[in-house]
Amino acid sequence: MQRNGPIALAFHSLVVVFMLAPMVVVCLVAFTPENTLAMPWNGLSLRWFGAVFHHGDFMSSFGNSVRLALLAATISTLFAVPAALAITRYEFRGREALNALFLSPLIIPHLVLGVAFLRLFSLMGMGGSFGWLVATHAIVVTPYTLRLILASLTSMDRNAENAARTLGAAEWTVFRRITMPLMLPGISGGWLLAFINSFDELTMSIFVTSPSTVTLPVRMYMYASESIDPMMAAVSTLMIALATVTMIVLDRLFGLDRLLVGKG
Amino acid sequence: MMGAQTSAIKPRLLAPFALSGPATLFFIGLVLLPLLLTIILSFNSYDYTAGIQGDFTFANYLTVLQDEYYLSTFWRTLRLALLTTVITVLIGVPEAYVLSNMRKPWRSIFLLVVIGPLLVSVVVRTFGWSMLLGKNGFVNGALAIVGLDPVQLLYTETAIVIGLVHIMLPFMVIPVWTVLQKLDPTVEAAALTLGASRFTALRRIVFPQAALGILSGSLIVFALSASSFAIPGLLGGRRLKMAATLVYDEFLIELNWPLGATIAIIVLVANLVIMLAYNRLIERQAKRKLG
Image 1: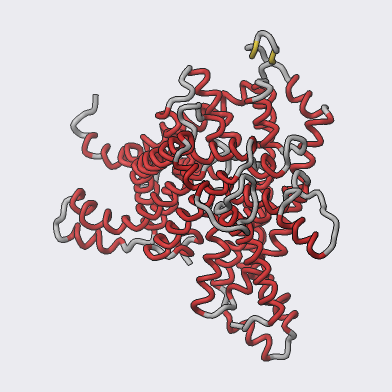
Image 2 (image 1 turned 90 degrees about the horizontal axis):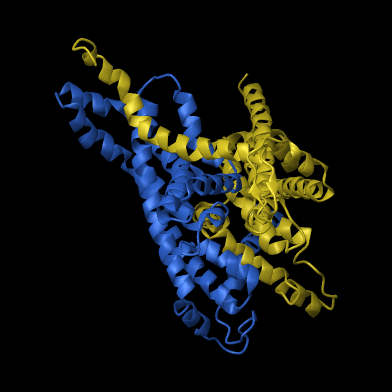
């Protein structure tokens, strides 16, 4: 391993500044006492945070997004666990095709999925319901749950299962006492990635949300493209704080690099 | 009705289908079916008073592929996505290398700094850039302090590329970092001991091994950039459209769904073609390394 020279470190500092700059600016501007997007040179104020909590639309969208992400991640996990078992534990025709189908939301642009869902729902006459929004999000996040569960199943030591079987354990007992506990890190990691991805999803949601089911990213996008006042900065700061807490928790639980980078 | 004989064997054979069945039905109903409906929609014609017609026509594809406005938007999408990919390689690859050379605590801390923004909503980060690049923004403020004239950055292609590079950088750093982690550090050290210059060691030892990571990273970055929505939407303004904002306009403002569907299908097909071609390239590269 080589040490980094001064040029490398200078380059690295620029990259770090570049990555953090927009978020730092957002957090600073959120504390402005002024009515415009200005740096808080003349004292700090929490008035725009107060404004967020009294803004009914933002609060209801936040509620929508949390409920949506909880449901979508859970439903996706319920589909992904048996699917992952089928893919890793059995040889059958169409296995590769199924795997590709379940991972396809990663390859199909969310824009295209959004348009496709909009068309389907308009033909079915059920646009705008929360239940269908949950279904679309469950589709979009399934690649994340599936991939982590698949990884935990393929890296698992099959001898433990075989030993339990040899000792006379029934199939269901083997699954409940051996396989399931060994899958758990993959399931919880996948669920969390699914939750985060659903919570932040914008491009697909903007096509399938209705005024009553608008999610937080969609609400923020609409707000940012129409009016620009410091309230947007305050909401963004709250989101950054939430993401930072999530990041620290994930890092403690799983190691963020392992979760985001894969088995490293 | 199943006979008693076969029922003893059947459960084993049916098990994978029973396990994957629910997910398969879910995906057929909510991925394949909607895509099929969108393809059909793209061949329907649209009348501004009567709405979507149930006919079959290539008119939408001809319109999109002949009209100056749509062509220039596709061209801009392609150009900006390519530019973003190149810049992301130029920044992300050295950064991944610098990160992998760092010592224990710093390495994981700065890896978090570089890939952690993935957890922050794209809307938030793009909003941050719109403040930095705006007419009275902080970049122009800094220019004024140095005594330079303000420049128009927001609502230009430059702004879109800056925003895209910021969002995409983690997607380049992650695969390159993963490859570099597997690299045997003693090989580079050996090259240096044998008298290779730092640059030669990088060029001949590190870079060829990192190539796979760079290839897969640039595929992700290109695909995500070409279909990105929030960045051209917030940093490109009303005038500078990219494919995604164009589709949004057709669907939710113009209400010409068939034309919007046509553009979406073109984006999808272009995406798939580029991915398949690129995957071939990566496989060839991988084979050459193994063989």
